[in-house]
Image (cartoon, rainbow, N blue to C red; front, top):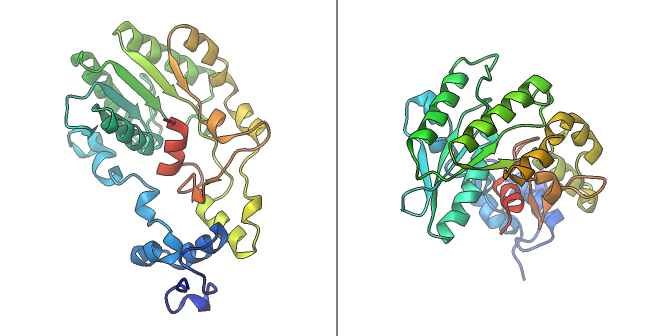
Length: 280
């Protein structure tokens, strides 16, 4: 017989088997919040660290800390670089797992609230423009970097401004002029709630099967100007990785897959979400 959740779970979550349904898993997962050892035992749920890149603390915001950017993947000279804001962290990790399996490596250059756009001035942090200039200079200085991934919180509402999109367009042109393959990771749909907490609530009321995210048309409206350039960029040789194509159907966007949350908050994809977007 399967064991029940550890003692004490009954006060805030009914005792459930360690090997059990997604609903039971979420009830126990939330009860064990902050107790990674219990999360691992309870319903075989992964600890929080499997939803967030294990490299996030060491590899994110390296420019602001005066640290060297991380090289992820195999122990070889990197041939790719991910340039982005905090939304690029889990993408970089997902890409590194794939790269390692292929005997390749990539560099992560991510800076909080700083999209990879030359000429963009972050309203609250003057270091963003310097970080972006440094990233571009590093790309120019290393001809071994053949592919550049661009990732950011494109769907935040601010980054669909025509002036901003024009600067992104100019950045892509500048990278292509350096002979680099550009891979744009498009907008991941932000949700109007904290996804793990929302899933836990649905699990408590026995309604996890109804879990669904934001309406697709809402995100399309928030990224209209950006998405209008996708076809032209692709015609010019830019590769597009479109999270909405992986996460959304014709109406709604997913927030859970195979029992795992696709986000670790309301708008950052979890490792599981990033892996689903990156694909095989």
